[in-house]
Amino acid sequence: MSSVQRPSLLVLAILSAVSLLALTGPCSAVCVPKAPGQYAFQHDSSLSRSFSEKQSEVQWSAPHSFPVMKNDLILRAARGETTERAPVWVMRQAGRYLPEFRKVREQYDFFTICRTPELATLVTLQPIDRYDGLLDAAIIFSDILVVPQALGLKVEMVPGKGPHLPEPLIGPGDLKRLKHKVDVGKELRYVFEAVTMTRHALQGRVPLIGFVGAPWTLMAYMIEGGGSPTFSKAKAWLYKYPEASHELLQRITDVCVDFLVGQVRAGSQMLQVFESWGGELGPDTFEEFSLPYLAQIARRVKEELGPKASVPMTIFAKGSWYALESLTDIGYETVSVDWTHTPDSVKTITRDRVTIQGNLDPSVLLGSDEAIVGAVEKM
Image 1 (cartoon, rainbow, N blue to C red):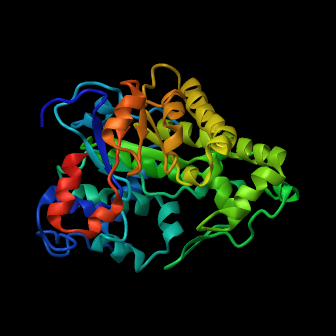
Image 2: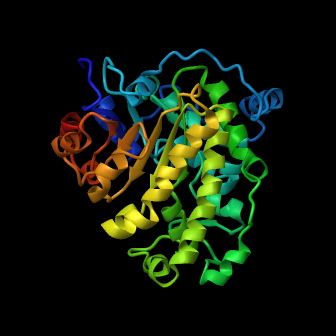
């Protein structure tokens, strides 16, 4: 592929890892490793022990000496530099489509993997190892709902159903149930340790992406108690309790900022903010209850890290097509777009001000190999 400029769709963030079929050519639903059993996992394996030994050698809060980068393509693209080709990563890069991940899940529940740095490192590396040379970034294995957990809410991952918060926020009085001040270094230390461990284990093969859920999206889960077709309870808060809504959003924002800064100090080289339920809001409510907090996150993270950090940040506001112009102007180097945009319309609106990431419709992956390849090439 010839070099590309900032207005092009530089980062092909494909929304399901099965889309790797488009990159590797025709094969079965999940490509099998050449060496049988190479992804087998045992809790007392030498791999797990080596991760534990490495963990004891580093502290997430201290300066690190990481391996030299061998592939910084995605970082250059995110900063708007001319690149020799479009970098590729996958939003759900490590997960149940991988047989080696399912093997780990047979022994450990979802949040145990998230909270155990050795396990989080192991599964983060699984797609990088399996598709060696085909991916240009790793994204740390974690979940956006670790922030509500840090704030004091219980979060469960129910097999076949997804996240469940058994005691959601019902009214403004429930805000007192949340921790007023969150010690992110204590509550989310396991993520920072996993980031540092993973960064070392990657050996410079690809950069490591850290992430957080956006305030409105996290608020929606905290009030709704899980996923929802409409998030009507959370949206009702915005109209019934606007002051309490802003208070909650600000408290979530404060944790998000500290969390992202901590991830960078632990070793993350790129950050993404997921406003997964932005599309549930109309333009006016998005402008009042989402956009200011997204802008605040970008500004405060950069202020905390200082000008020398140079860590690109990406915002992905799914379904918020009406806000693309505004999202372009709030301090993120990359704006991720979904399938409701066309490349030409995105270029017209963003006018070379940011790098664009996306925008494959995941439903394409239900089609033929030819359809998948065609959709990826069109991006």
